[in-house]
Image (cartoon, rainbow, N blue to C red):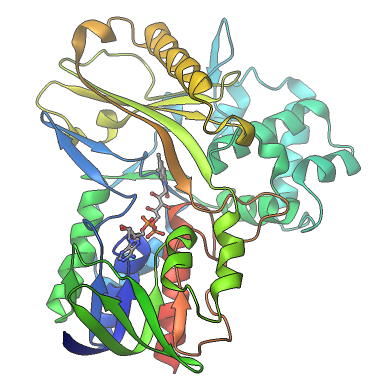
Length: 430
Ligand SMILES: Cc1cc2nc3c(=O)[nH]c(=O)nc-3n(C[C@H](O)[C@H](O)[C@H](O)COP(=O)(O)OP(=O)(O)OC[C@H]3O[C@@H](n4cnc5c(N)ncnc54)[C@H](O)[C@@H]3O)c2cc1C
């Protein structure tokens, strides 16, 4: 057994672990990141037959006010932003395609809302932007809109938007306060959606570059088996290679993993509760094509089936071999449908039918498909009766938590980045 001492030991090398490590090391802290597998966690890029498949669309929402933007600025990260083109975004409404009301032009053109409804929808957006609507934590967005007598069409439009931002087939269950705080930020941004050239891997490489430049240590294939605690402090983490001790610790591993490593500590019960919460699960079905199938849109959302297709290679040519195309389809799920194998098969067929409809000829061009029938987009889904984990619990005063299961700003990776930034600042303030 060897002993290694650091200022901060960070367990988990996903986006939360790497971003907090990069930030702390840039401020002079001696850090070590311990990752049981490969770096990146769920933000992984897999190279198969010349195609770079990202697990997830790596879409960053409201990038100009995002925490990732702050990391970019403060750490001098090189990020090749590829902004979403709203004129190429369409809703599939059965027999027709119509504009997504993602900007004024889209709102003017969309067939989803009629004359007066457009005005009412704009009014709802304005109220949200001005924070005149804040919602209530004990009321779902469905209940809130009923209480406020929001017009049916406008209500449906708001829920359709929420479906895509929260990756859910049940947007009505989102707590109303979460809904309004999310959209007050998104509606005021100039950059609602952006992709990262080179995918998640490019971002991971940038965090690693900063950590290594500041003499941080990154150990992959190093699984933390338990946290070693004494009274109200963590003293070390135990791995098969030995114990790593530190002044401060950040646990950036999902609650379902955390229950194991915190067994028989004061946190056992608190973490067990979070580990039982439902995650946001989707089906992902990506296809790598030999030759591009040119269509006048780069994003299609099938409103009835809650499936979207993004032409990732429209935004990022580096993810395909020359002349190729990479399409990514994601099907949202109802919680009660998760784990139902028959239904997963049916959703896969629905995705294929959507490819047939909008990218005719894809089967002949197919080089490689990549399917995941249970992709965890967010470890704790923000619905009524579920709460994210706090980033600090009073039981151990040198232990912090970060990840998309924690309290923070936004949803998805923004939660990982914001909780990572918040814990890094708390540690620096000490
Ligand atoms: C299909 C899909 C689509 C998505 N689309 C988007 C999107 O468009 N935009 C967006 O912002 N986000 C998106 N996301 C979400 C985003 O990928 C996640 O929010 C983010 O990657 C979570 O990072 P994390 O560091 O919080 O957690 P994780 O990635 O889960 O990292 C946890 C890390 O801890 C490691 N670990 C676990 N146990 C141990 C242990 N005992 N010892 C050491 N290490 C351990 C794991 O191996 C892992 O690397 C998507 C996700 C998916 C799956």
